[in-house]
Image 1 (cartoon, rainbow over the protein chains, first blue to last red):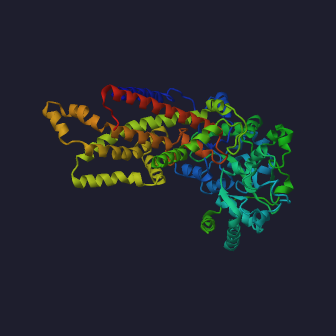
Image 2: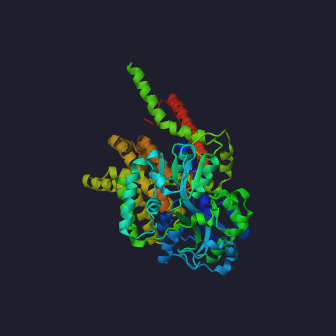
Image 3: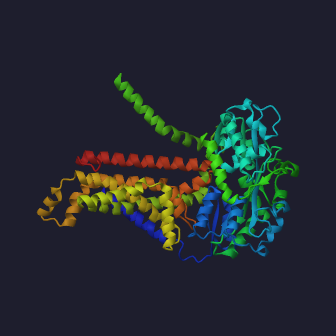
Length: 347
Length: 264
């Protein structure tokens, strides 16, 4: 037994020395990239390393809030991150982002104009669009034989215990607000209270409030209706042809994930190289095909298969998303949202 | 009749424990990406796993951190336990309560406070900070598993050894250590598994491209856990089982040969 331990110790020592010695001796510039999990075609990173001789340290996170906490706390020097719309706004407000020198991002010209000058980054100073999408209703045609075009269907007694809602505060409250015809960025407490009553009324009909499980449940036909993100809807529709996706006529949430450079960045030039590289149509195409979400890159969109290009789930017509809004950072008012959501959950 | 029920109970317990793992392994051979329905047999997830640098890198860091942190915390924890064992009543009480604190503390508190500490002393977050964090939360568990063994120890054993001419260190090595070995091994195994499992503390104390499996898997949650993870879990499960079988057959051989064992 003691012998075995000696051997293990020796192996560990050797490994330790290996770990300690790796990474030294290489004097390549380094770039720390912080992205959502499974949100890039990883071969792209290797290509970037080869082309520019810059080593990429790649880390992942699961939510905007996780990423925010890590960057806010300092001690990390992330050079590029991928926050969503409302989080970009919050980070700009809190002076956590560097201005991007657009002269170093010549590929910015490929980004579709409709993704520029959006509310969270009005002058395009801080972020470069990466992916986008909508929130809508995914339903099973076998069970739901009426026309689905409104949030109202999620309150229909007929589908009791067949409805899946998102286990996410902003998204679920937004559904209720939109159903009532209010803005999903409302700062009016009365409107929020109304939305709360709607959600409480809906509760007996809801099978579950879910995250990622929604995919298996809808593909496996355990539920008939679900609130989902468009990118996931496409993946589910590929696996089960009975599924359809619609953005309700009252409007919904439009979301963006953009590339930014946090103030913690120590390699601004390399970071801009990377963002420019990611915006190169060929590279953006590989990422779009791997992830299956919708690209913000017009040139990339032109390269996609006709079938995907004309897929209204991924690339809806202008009039279909007219009533859609982008989440804004509610600032201090987020406490009210917290309260309402908690009251709905415990009811 | 009673025998039948005890058997049934055991079977049920094992079913309850292993059914999820079996399902997970079965779905690692599933052609479709979803975990909901079966779509033919494939080995593609195993091949794509071997090409996935991100997952392999996090596996490498997970194993290295687990091995290093369990060994270092076992060393520190064992000596701490011996020290605590020889304290007076009050000292023992105070130290034991201090030792329970990290065990009872929620992970998120430990994680955030360690991160704050590392930033405060200007340590760059990365491999070293994550290793230090893992050692920190492993030590109390080692202490807790070694102490009972020390309590069982006959007080006069070491004295007898020294009376017979052993130096204190020799007495410790040849008499005390073999006696408390089962506790040390248990402690190091607990430390190892805790280190492999940990997500929250690792998430807050890591940086500069160092991630472990928990972080990598958890961060996939938004877009759905990739079946590559099923393949990886299946491989890890099989290797742990094999390791256990090897260790068990070896020890049973040792018992037959010498009539002694390190595991009671």
